[in-house]
Amino acid sequence: MRKPGSSIHRWLPLALAPSLFVSGCSWLPQLNARRPGNNAIITPMHCDQEKGRLRLAVKDNIDVVGVVTSAGSEYLAKNGQPAKADAPCLTIARERNVQIIGKANLSEFAVSPSGVNEYYGTPRNPFCFWTKRIPGGSSSGSAVAVAGGMADVAFGTDTAGSIRVPAACCGVVGLKTTHGLVPIQGVHPIEPDHLDTVGPIGKDIASTVVGMDLLERGFVGHYASVKAAHPTGASIRIGRLKLKGTDPKIDDAVDAALTKAGFQVVPLDPSFESKWEQAKKDGNVVAAAGAWISDKNFQSKAGVSLRTKVVILTGRINYNTKYRGALARRAAWQSALQQTFKKVDLIALPTLQGVPPHSPSALDIGQLEAEMLQVQNTVAVNYAGNPAIALPIPLRGSGFSVASLQLIGPPRGEAELLNAGRLIEKANRPSNRGSSYARLTDACPVTTDILR
Image (cartoon, rainbow, N blue to C red; front, side):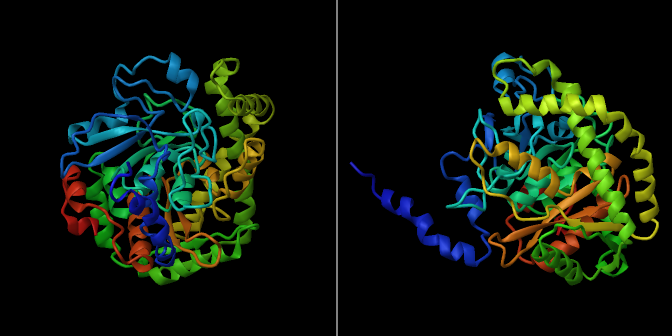
């Protein structure tokens, strides 16, 4: 016997879809989160769902005591032992009684920019109702959980863009922290000596500020000082980096967002682009070699996907042929950025050069992964160790409702990045996107005025 209202629940999303698209898809992520097969959380955890407590999703390459850290791998899920302790990056969250709702999905061993996971299923891009686009990786589940309202904040990791790329694909905010700022012990590694970082993902700037305060003690106080010193964009100099191959509509969206925020926009010298491109190549080499350094023991294991084994093998080739040369050029790139930050406060460019690609067939996934390494403008930042933020901005005429603007800052410039992000968000997305300020302030000793 059909349950009363079952037809309504089945057809309501279809009836609402046109208005969702017209309104910029602001409801679509939460609607998609409630559809079967979301795949954002792979290990749900007991959660009291108490009102007023912040909900945190933790990427499943970060240790949570008593839970197996699968790193998105069938092999580790079946053969790994429960973590004996939390990763140190969870210390503040535990002290503040934050609810960890579960371990979030990811690309296996965090080595894929697509966010695809063959074993657990790929998290659904929250902005796609009929067509399928990739969620971005490797922190795909973290971004989808936040976008869909399942979590207020998520912790992800970023080695070559693994926080910012899924943030860009899912229309949320992702912060890659300064290398070495947040402890990475208890995190499944890729290239910890030069690239690996832990950072927050939030639906908006306010929740990302709180996420950062859960990772760095006293951060919100520093953020408040920066906000007071730069209440508008007029005193902030933004170096604008334009790269060949970028969709012109995305470049236009970035320029429009910066203009609306009132920044001083300074075009960067064309010579900087060539340095960026070399850093991108070198960063990709170091990241690829890291997959071999950290995961070579899984090369022959049953339960590790063929795609991941190919990535590990490619890393071996890079390690033997290009890795040392790439590291030798790292200091020159760091110096180039340091000199640039004497002229501007932050650097702006798109996070991705195009809209998120459609999900490929199993036969085409390898080609997509290679293409993603070229269209994501992220790894050069990891290669230097600097912080960077990706945040959504309006996009029109490209078949996708949001683009992602990336801001890069000097080392330990997280507060400056979030303040600039606040100004961009305020100018371009004036309506609040649904953050629960009660939950945010419960987990962070600050008034709502600081977060608004």
